[in-house]
Length: 200
Ligand SMILES: [Zn+2]
Image (cartoon, rainbow, N blue to C red; front, side, top):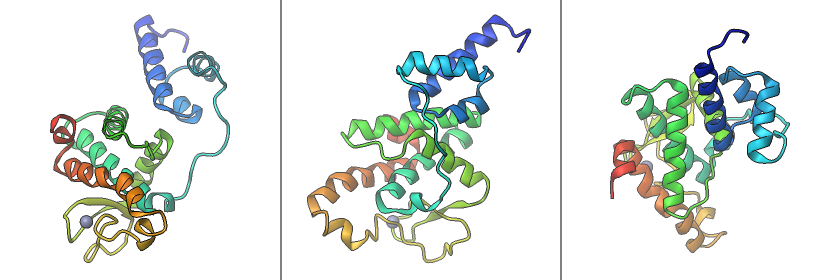
């Protein structure tokens, strides 16, 4: 920390600002940004007007399996893989760019961002530690987030087999409003995020 170049430090500050604006937690900032905890907290307070929240990071893979969460998670993770594999981004840049793209897609359709940044990067870690996998739906061919080591052979995704209560208990209109655009999006995401970003 003592002899860091001025430019190097500016880049770290820019990275921290970008991550804070996306909703990154302090634990994540400390791990990814080369600035002291004290400076990160000061930056956070200046940007957000409040202290960074305390509390534990989510640790369960089950959250990603519920109906709406699985749609959003699958959409994001397909974009992340594209950034990593096709666009050859570093893991951190792939995370930032795919999360931005995910938010843009949801907001463009007037939907709610269900997957927050912390959930998104926690999911990436779950994949890295082999707790989650992508399973191909045998009906629509889309790639969806699933528990690792689940049988892939007869997998049917949440869109092709929504739970009955998604349509009934909450009303078909509500289910349509939340799921309808996501279906469109996930097929775009599976075709490649470039299509999702630029396509009409
Ligand atoms: Zn399907």
